[in-house]
Length: 95
Length: 483
Image (spheres, chains in turn brown, orange):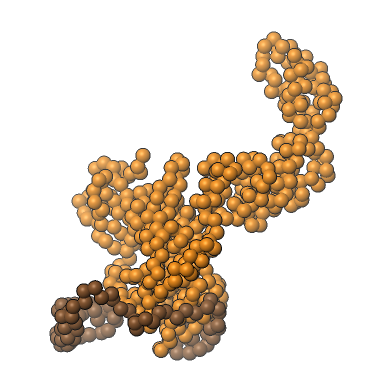
């Protein structure tokens, strides 16, 4: 797998990271070397091994259906750069 | 007869699949302890997890899992004892973490089936591809200010079930029947209130068209469809749009479109051009969800009787027509009401009164079966008064209207208004004699063979008796006297 500058531009856009065109080839080179390193994992034979998504043998902890949080709009809004009453406000998103 | 749309090049078949987002009924959110109530003051039901403060960790709500499993069982679907949560990444102002926790590769519920009934009495099986659990987003309000969008995170993190159908739907009618049936099942199960107006059930509609026998053509996804009627309209207008594109030599592009109910058209949502690149990956904050078969079995054992089973029982036990049974089981509360009325009485008569007079009265008075001015007990008592000949069918309608207006018990109305049926044959004979004496010409005509006049005499006698005559006795008396 290899990324060209156009792919890097698309990934940056999806992640909302601004990248100057001049930086694209540099970033492509860096990302490709990381991908190349990860690709070494393909050399391992994993036939018959189930994918793992967490520590082995551990399963999800569950909470009871009880309301025990929330009710503090001031704390939730404390870091809001802009607000109107108890609403967050952002520049108008037009559809 | 399959549904098709006639184009310039002949008939086109439509292919529809629905993605329904159903809000889970639970007290707390999917991954936090904040409340889920609708209509609370802005940002008052938001925990730090829901607002995506750094370092906050999600903990799964067991009841939301149980609700998803119950729904899966109600859809006759496979329950996956191991499932997993993934992050679906996209940017929007009402999604503070920049990703939605969802289930992509390993949903909690696999393939199932929903049986729909159509107007012509036929049934069809619509496949369910999967059901998965995910978080709802916050709510954006664009109409509060000319320059700003307001964001309320109360809905952020509320549990949703996304229920995806196979592309098995072939007409607007089938799309409507599928949604109605799905909503009915969810309400019976108590897993979603199905309220499309409040947004607790929403549908995305995937539409494509093709010539009969072809493979699938490119589909478009129509979002923002918030009523069953609009879903049916969206299917039709989007299919017609695609047919026009194909027939004018163009090619339908796969895209997300918006349904504009005011204009009755769909239009492209350019903002969603990256929307299908969600960069899913397993959520590292959440371990796999592993369920015990015994827990699933216990949930299955506690399920209520569902609409299909109830409908079959109403047909076999009460002798109802499939149509009446379908109408009565659509809402659980209606089915309960009907059974209370039918218990120990003529079930077909009970069904006629509930689906006819009662539904009419509810419509007229803007009430529902839960707030019905006529209780099941009182409607049953009215049927008893008909059965024991206290009143006749025509007077019963009059008593019923009085019950709707006052909520009073039928026996009290009959007594207060003196509506008791006259079964005294001497009174009936007297009334018949009076009518015959007043209409000698009609009597002569009848006797010379004009049988149709019989109805005239029945009408006149009943009128003279203020509608209270026992119809069978009146008929017998007239027949005997006219000879």
